[in-house]
Structures are given as structure tokens and as C-alpha cells.
Image (cartoon, rainbow, N blue to C red; front, side, top):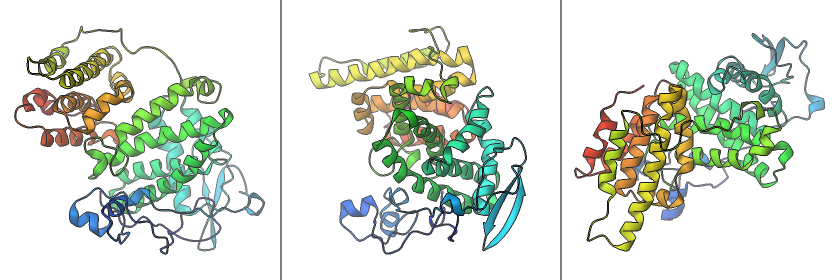
Length: 406
């Protein structure tokens, strides 16, 4: 991915218009701060990080503001089947096709209106099942009118999807998506800090958009497609883990809101189910996780951590054989939340056993390459693991490497 700078159209009088960041703000990237060198703040990768081939985190650090107009000053749409947009002091009426949201968009700029319209027509169908799509098409956009970060989250994901459909506009739309996400994160963090159970639904809806957004970005060239790490930009693996923790911690409150209809607690596979042909490949990993006579107590403890992580993956693996493609999606979301902090530490330190287990998880992601936000994610992670592992351990991931995509 090589989008141009993170600034998009500037102007006045727009609810969701994204303004150009103020150049006098000195927010160098985290890598330059750590190395104590001057950052030129070039976006999306500063010159120093590009020269030294480092993971620049500047794209997630841009302090931006959204111009908001008081509701009393917002012009009303002439009728609920049209939206009025304004750009360069000129108004334009756009008919709304499909179910009408009855949202008064005020003078939302033309591009934001286009991207929101794309969300209601296409993107919402891709992130929700048919029984709950009306919630994501109608209720969530209405909720976003009260929570600015949620609207920016919708626009970020929708713009990213539109960029995949319109390659000629990809730099513009990816740039817009990045800036929208940057605008969403500060108010979202502030919202969480003052969280009340009554409005937890907006926070969960936003996190529901963040996960596919980060996954889609990791399919491009960039740090999020590499082995998970806490260094540099946030990684989608940790975003999935946080999303599931949020869901489990707030389950009771979420059940009482508009999103409760889609929450169903049920195991996707019977425990300890090994009755499927691919388990032989997972069982083979146990060979490298056995202690030897020379193993130290620390090494034996690490091997036990890895065996537990492997068993959790094997328990979930039968899901695809019971539920088809939806079983794979469920596993992709579930497994990161089931591994321990100790396993994460071994994975971050690139322990061979941890990476071999991660490679077989990446195979599941690779098989769902047909989903637009998972396209390229699994192969990139597998490639990063293959580059890290030596010849001694590579035979353990050959099956995952050679399996076809999608």
C-alpha cells in the first residue's frame, strides 16, 4: 500500500468533512521518537523510517479535527428520499436508492455522502448476516449521528471497500479511509474512558468495523501483514483478541440493545473433536513440542504453553467441517482470544513452536481469501513466518504453505 498523504478535502460547514492536519503540530512517528532523531512527519511513512526500513507509526498518530456545525444551523433535506450535499458552496440533491434511512445529512460533503451511500448498499451486506443486516444498514448509521467516532468508522471501512472496487481511485479512497480512522480513534478512546452501559452499543459497533478495516489493510504491503507484535502499528491479531474480549465482557449489556439479536452463545464444535482428516497435520506439530532430557525447567514450561495453544486450535478446527465457510470465519475470530498471554509472549519473541502453530492458524485465514477484507492476509502472514523459520522447522509448515487459497 502506498497511499499519498493522509489529508483530504478541506472546507467549512460539513458535519463529517475531514480537514487537513495542522502542520505546526509536532507529532513525529514513534520510531523517530524512540531513536531520538528528527521526524519530517511525511505520510504515510516518514523519510527516516523509509530509509531505515522501519515500521512507521505516523499514520496512527495524526491529530486531526472534524468541523461540526450546530444542529440548528444545518439545512434540512427537502424530503426523506433525498440528501442534500454541499461542496464549494454549491448544493446538490442526490436521490437515495434502496431503503431510506431518514437521516438528515445536513451539508455532508459529496465524497462522504457517496461513501456512506456505498455502505448502506453494499458494505453492510458483507459484515452482517441476512437476519441482522437491517440493524447495520439502518440502526447503526442512526446511532452514528450521535457518536462521531462511529460515523468515521463507517466511512473508513466503506472507503476501503470502495477502493477495492475502483482501482483508479484507490490512492484517494485509501487516503480517505486512513484519515477517517485517525479521526475516529481519539474520540473513541475518550468515549471508552467515560463508558456507560447505556451507550456501550456504539463502542461495540465501532470495534466491529475496526477489525475488518485492519484486516483489509494487512492485505496490502505494510507492517500489519507481518508477524504480530506490539511494536509499531497495531496488528489485526491483537485487534481480534481485543474485539472478542470486549464482546465477552459486555455480553449482558449488548444483549439488551439493538445488537443483541445477533448474539448467540453456542460452541461451534464438540470439545476434543478429532474426527476430521486434517487433524493429522496438527498432531504432527506435537513432535516438536516434546521436552528432551536436556530441556531446562523454563524450556519445559514454554513447551507446555505451546501444547495448550495447539490443543485449543485443534478443538476449534472441526468447526469448518460442521459449519462450512462460516465455521472458518468463526475460528479466525475465536482462536486469538483463546490463547494465553504466555503464548503471545512466545509468539512475539518468534519462538519456532509458536510460529508453527500460528502458521496453521494463518492457513485458515488463507482459506477465506474470498472475503474482501481477508484477501492476501493469510498468505502474507504465512510468508512472514516462512522467512523467520529456519530449515529445521520449515517441514512443519509445508502443508500450510502449499494449501491453495480460498
